Every structure is written in structure tokens, then in C-alpha cells.
Image (cartoon, rainbow over the protein chains, first blue to last red):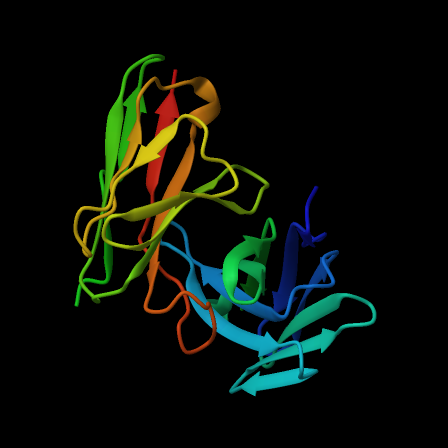
Length: 111
Length: 116
């Protein structure tokens, strides 16, 4: 029973264009969502987060959108750069405890 | 600061062997976690600790044991290795128990374990 789903295993984008990574969740009690980025042979690193009381959070080139009614969030990267090529994990938590992770999406940014 | 350090990076075990995956953090974080990542799956929580001397089970604890004798160290023990434990193991830490942007999880670089 996957509570957090990333249905696209991979995404390929041209440098300079927008990358949109999607994430769906089933648990309506989730109140905080995070995105982690992972390079090969490294651990995941925190990228950006959003509370359930907001519908958008922006940090430089990265913006996360939350649609609670659809139980859907997305990460937008504009403009995409080759250094953004990595695996992106969506994660969710209820009251800040025990993160539940999606399976990840491999992003490839072509130069 | 080294952050979260995991050793070894790679290990091959035979079925039935035992081993300890080491994890140390130098950020004085109270909370520490062990996750495993299987191909095509998200990270799943094995065990976590809210402070020295306190541990609790996560989502997939069977076949593993942990201890937390110091704030810095959180080793994960496999007593009787099985092929189902072939995975990449990540240790993580956080300052507070609530995972937020002010207290995100900090991960180590992982241990790739193969059991044959």
C-alpha cells in the first residue's frame, strides 16, 4: 500500500526548459511534504518543502505546488540545468513524524 | 562537520552471516534513523531513535536490531542475513523529531549490501 506515489520513473528535459515532477498521495492526514534530491553514490539531500496550509512554496529555481483536494503535489524546476540531473524523491509526513517516501523520479537534463 | 558517516560502503554477505552497519553523526542530533531502499521503491524506515538509550521500530524492522548507546552512533545489526535484505541502507539524523524545512533529515551516503 503505497501512500506516496511517483508514477513517472524517469523524465528527460532539455537544458533551460521547465522540469515538472509529480507526486500523488493517499493519506489525507499528511500535513507536510518534502522533496529530496539524490545523486549516484550519495544520500538524499533536502531540497524544498511545503506545509499543508500553503499551496505554493518557492526557493530560487525550485517551486513546489500542493493541491490538497487532488492529493497531488508537483516540483517545478525553471530553468533546468544539467546539474539538476538526479533522482528526486517526494516525501510526506503526518505531524512531522516518520517520513513516507515515494519511489523516486530520475530526472535527466540534456545540454 | 562530516555530517552522517556510514561504513562500510559496500558489503557482500553469505546467507546466515551477521554484520553491523555503522552510522555516526557529528551534528549533535537527537534523532537518528535507518532506512532501506529497494529498486523501484521508496525509502522504508527500519528503526529510529529519539535519543541515547531509546529506540523504536519503523515500518520494516524484522531481521534487524539497533542500539543507541551514545548520541553520535546508531549501528544497525543483521543477525542472520537473508537474500531479502539485499538493499541499499541509509542512515539519517535530524535535530528535532518533527521533520520540517528547519529540521530536515540529513542522510549518509549509504551502504550497498548484497546477500547471496
